[in-house]
Length: 213
Image 1 (cartoon, rainbow, N blue to C red):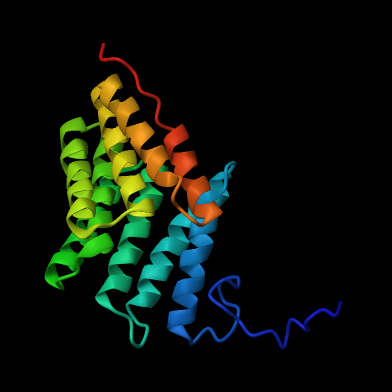
Image 2 (image 1 turned 45 degrees about the vertical axis):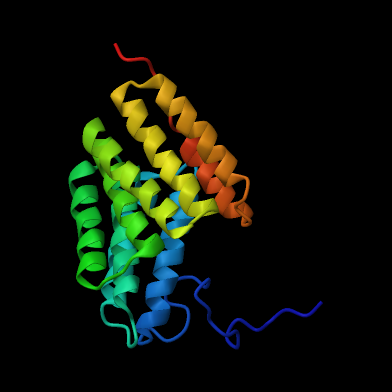
């Protein structure tokens, strides 16, 4: 087997950030997005990893804003990732701010389907982190409604139930949390990508239903 000369390798969106021309804003934005996602999936992140994750998510969104041909959907997904990073790190205020930006971009540009669903998913997750069970459940229910209205299954439907389970857990509704966890796992069985399934299972494992005190 021969090895490719790294100097001759063609950079892709999966390459480390900065691989290739740093003037290619679209490529750099995608590389930063994917590297942020890799850190989100990392089980034992260090404090430095957390800092890098924050900076790269913001950098990705910045470069999408300057990338030729970038669409409002690209910007919405960048905002969604920033919100997700802050939610994972337990920081509700910036998570909510960027989740609201996802919804703003979707509504201002007539974006529907799964991008709109994930705007509400981000809001549900951020409110759950903030401990606001009512708002978390409200937005999570909207995710489910969009999935049902548009015939969206597998990934999106699984995360709709994940969001509802998370909201129910925050509210202390053990029965509802367990029901939505089961629904999320059933929908997750249809997810083709093993990495996506692993991400779902990781999120579900973090939800521990507790009876109301």
